[in-house]
Image (cartoon, rainbow, N blue to C red; front, side, top):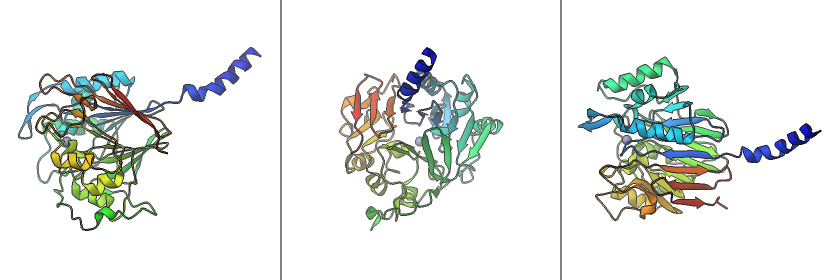
Length: 345
Ligand SMILES: [Zn+2]
C-alpha cells in the first residue's frame, strides 16, 4: 500500500521535478564563437570551438588553449559529460580550428559531428587545423546537414535554416516581408561565411535563431521575399555583430526581444550593426560578451556586458535559461546580474 502511495506521489510530482530549461551558454572566446546548448532532457550541443591561438593575417602564430579551457569550464558548469553534437557553423579559424584540440581533451568522445559539408575555400588549401578537424570528424559519426533538416534533440526542435548557401524552403503561408521592398543586399562573397550553418531552436513557445557568420546576401535569401523564419525571442547577432551581417530585412522582421552579441573588445559590434539591433522593433535588451572599446557609446549598460576588460580578460559567459512557456532568464556570469523576460502574451 505504502509503495503504491509513494509511486502515486512520484507520478504526480515527477513532471514538476523534471520540468527543465533549455540552457544556452554564450562562451567568451574573444571575438570567436563557442556556444553550448543543453536541452531539457540533458542532451548537449556545442556550436563552434573558438580560437586555437593568436593569429596574424589569418594564420595562427601563437597557439594557446585559452578557449579550450573556457569551453571545458562551461561543460562542467552545465553538467555535460559527453557532447551529443559538435556543430561547426563554418570553417573559419575562430569557429573550426580549435575543434581538434578541444575534442582531444573531452572526457568522452563526441557522439555526432555536424557541419555544412564541402568547404567553400575558393582555391585555398585547408589549413593544418582544418585537416585535423576533418580527421577527428571522419573517425566518428558525422552528418552534413542541409537547409530544412532537423537535428534530433528531445523536447526541442532544432531546424537547419541555412547551410552551404541553401536556405530553408519557405514554409507554406510564410508571410511576405515588407522590409525587402527596394532593398538590394551587397553581393555575396561566396565564401565560408556565406556557407554558415544556421539553426532555429524551438522549445515550446521559446524561439532562438543563430546564423553563425551568415552574410547579408544570404540573410536576404532567407528573409526575402517571404520571411521563412517568423519571429524569435532571442537572436544571436550575426558574425560577432559585424556589419557584414545583421541587415534590417533579417533583424527587424525577426522582431527579437533580446539580442546577444559574441563580440571581442575590438572585434564585431560595428556601429551599423549596433544601430540595426538597437533600433529593432520590440527589442528589449542587447547583451554583449565584451565592452566595445572603439565606440564607447555603442554599448549597453555594464550589467548587460559580460567582460569589461580588454587585457587579462577573465572570459565570463552569458547564460540563457528558457522555459517552454516562452519565458527566459539571462545571467551575466561576471556579477550574477540576471533579468527575467516574461512569456509573450
Ligand atoms: Zn567568426
